[in-house]
Image (cartoon, rainbow, N blue to C red; front, side):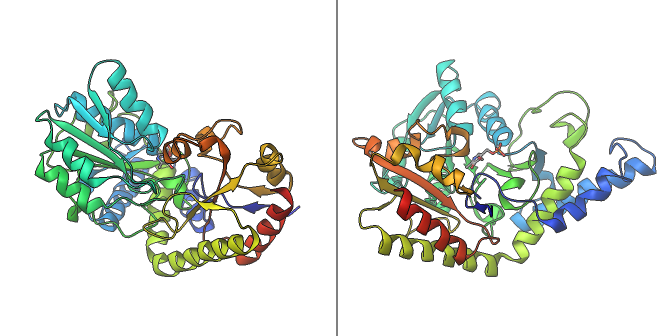
Amino acid sequence: MQRIYFDNAATTALDAQVLDAMMPYMTEKFGNPSSIYSYGRETKMAIENARKSVAKIVHANPGEIFFTSGGTESSNTAIHAAVRDLGCTRIISSSIEHHATLHTVEYLHKTKQAKLEYVNLTTNGHIDLQHLDALLAHSSEKTLVTLMHANNEIGNLLDLNAVGELCRKYNAIFHCDMVQTIGHYPINLHDIYIHFASSAGHKFHGPKGVGILYVNEEIKIQPMLNGGSQERNMRAGTENLYGIVGYAKALEIATEGYEQDSQYIQGLKNYMIEKLRTTFSDILLNGDAEGNSLYTVLNIGFPLTDKSDMVLFNLDMAGICVSGGSACSSGANSISHVIQALYPQNAASIVPIRFSFSKQNTKEEIDIVVDKLKIMI
Ligand SMILES: Cc1ncc(COP(=O)(O)O)c(C=O)c1O
């Protein structure tokens, strides 16, 4: 059975060229980057070249890029560091953040390390910037603002510059979860008022288990892990050498192909919206799908019927990979916290399905999926 993979916001297939770039570091180039002899020097060089390449692409200095195990570690590190090392006693976030953020801020709140306030959402799931301004204005406590650039479930995009400028105005620390956007958009970190940014390689055809944390050089934080002197004493432990090489290669490929790939994928998303609209009369586009929205993600609300419970299962049986919520909370019966926040009154009457595309998908696949949905909904 042919499998159709429409869950690229959960993870993407590793690019063959990325694997080729990684392979030597999984085989003959195995030296520990901390070793001083040639085997070590060549792998150390690979890491530093990867760092330089990544820094150039996101417009940061190499010293501002730290390799981590992915988005979760990067966001945890940034948020904890803002409270522990930068004096933030208050956090402003939103109820639709990824759990990597949400559970971290909730933990800091529960353990009384920081106050926590949620910024309001507009009706289509954007951050209410006027409310953010009001929240920032209303207290002089040092505040961390942690908001995601693109929502992984509904695709809504944040106005990064506007949030950065509000943080500048109120002297707040700004962390942004860019896990769904680094590798999907040109990003210029030096143009934004921002202190921390998180990213993960597996969202743009890189390997899993590797990401970056951008830390603006104007701020100083304590080590994320204590031990050896890797990552300039900030994150101890022998580096994920081939992961780092793969991350950088995947970002290079994504950057080179951006114009063409983003247009192509946006075309797929538009085509699916059109097809679904002509096939179903009563669907909802969850979030701002046709407005300020990530081109890879389309979240559709189907009406609740007696077949709804089985839709994801039936799609799976037909070889179609989609998600009901985010991958981390895709238990078929749990209503996603994002859908819950979007429809506080009636989330239970909506059956959300997230279709997320990559350059490897085709319109023919969309035709097949919509035909199957016709029978299953
Ligand atoms: C927006 C967002 N943030 C954070 C993460 C966590 O990234 P990772 O699984 O690489 O730790 C994900 C991945 O699901 C995500 O989509």
